[in-house]
Length: 237
Image: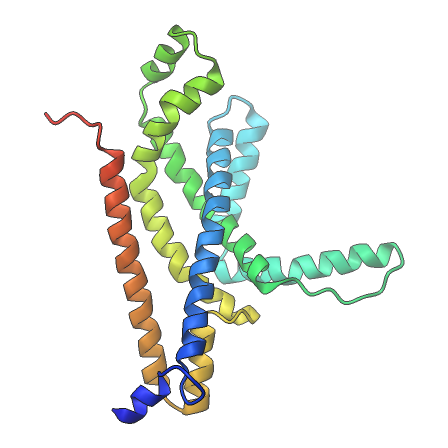
């Protein structure tokens, strides 16, 4: 027991500092990915319900690709593909150099692509749950299409899409573990290094499991509070 406490302690004799830094990177990656995924998913949903056939087709192709590909393969395509594309572009202008993409940025982009493809379906379902009369009421008040969307539709959209988006956030939090394969020192990678060095895999991977569970519990509590806040104006029948 004392040996285990020493291994997970902070300082030169323990791995607590490394585990804590991995937790910080995991949380930072998830939080940095979330707004990009939400914004991109919202605009993809708008494209899917657009009257322009080309926009609908492009949005459907996008979601089919990133919902169909394994997340790990998407991460590899972004991380290695961008490097190759940049190097090829530089080679065309006569510059021979090695380019390495930041693993945090690559992970954020790849996870945002995947998150947005699923979030677009959540937003699209929420759009379908809003009666057409809400749009007509906004137009009857003299509001423009943009103001109707911003003032009337968007608040209802968030409330309807929130349960599905909450589930996607929990999935995103767990999928950050994938970035360990491209060298980002997140929780999983730091736990793996500690397990290999100390020959105590059960201890460190068990700690990683507990940390992910704690993060999920905190997220679930926060999502429950946000959902309750979003329904504060509902009329009790």
